[in-house]
Length: 222
Image (cartoon, rainbow, N blue to C red; front, side):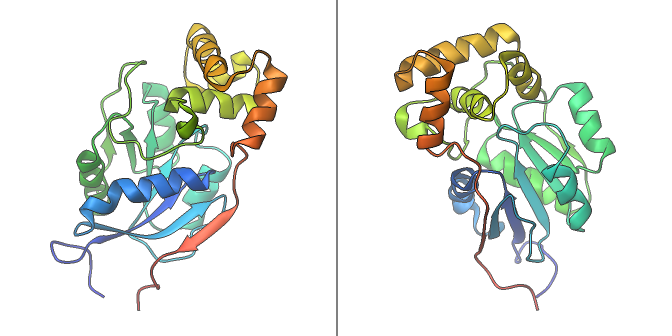
């Protein structure tokens, strides 16, 4: 198989802690199958298939530590972070550690594909910083969406389910403490709970526990 170009779509692996998130990203990219082909979906597993670029959805994990750092070390393919948070210090941290692109979740699917192509060609791509309350334009899917939770509310509930305090949620999610409290109140109303212990139990029962899985959709390049 030749190098990616006008007639050869990019081979992309999608990575996140939650299977539903990577599946949503795959669905989001389907209209661009002539430009990118998703060959592997990974949740807390290393990428096993040769790819041109890896797209890491930063749902509940914004800093380049732990699994993201491991991902950078294990694969020669460039990594693009798909994220809410594009503060200058976070972006610089990502770039210093080897991330090749930071793309905002307020970007359109076409903008995301454009960014993947630029990174695969050797460029470094960073989206403009979105406003705190900007909604995702083309975000694929997330835990709790079917229960009416927004992506932001879902992110906050997922972090609470991991045992984080409000202050720790704010630090991890790059939100003000007041914004975190607002998302908690609105999420609690939607899921019908009043206390943190109830929210954690609800989250565990509704798919907010990180998954461990790998799905190979295409055989490796010969």
